Amino acid sequence: MTDLTGGCLCGEIRFAVPLDALRGVMYCHCRRCQHRTGTAFAAGALAAPGSVSVTAGHGELRTYAPATGFHKQFCALCGSQLFTVRPDGDVHAVRLGALHDPPALPVLGHQFVAYAAPWHPLPDDGAPRFEERMPPR
Image (cartoon, rainbow, N blue to C red; front, side, top):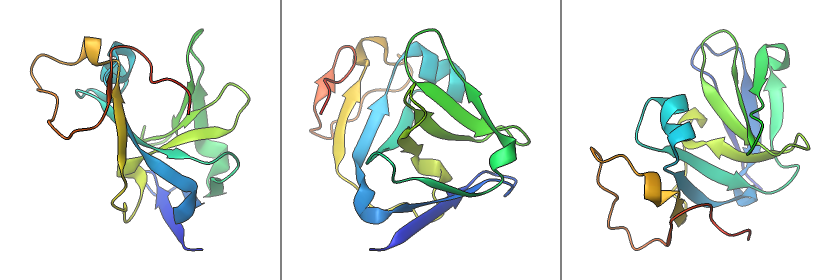
């Protein structure tokens, strides 16, 4: 089993996840992700429960816990967004841009396409599209 590694921009936080624990890519086009990333969507690799290990910088990992939805974790020093986290504390998705060598993964879908940015057309990638949240897998 090959571990992928990743981290934040400043290098303080580092993590590892087994390649076979990443189920595929989910793109989120909700307004919350647009505000959080400053881009048209967030791209995350869905991770098997318990598969992500923070290997350095745990003390700089911060959590934004909105009243609804999943929590978001980021580096307190550089602001890099790293994980989407279930309310129980387990990592649900890893930000693809935080991986050192992101693998080619299947696209599982685009969620919240009803809120897609008008200045960035949705790709014609054949992946399922969901007006709101993708149904649980």
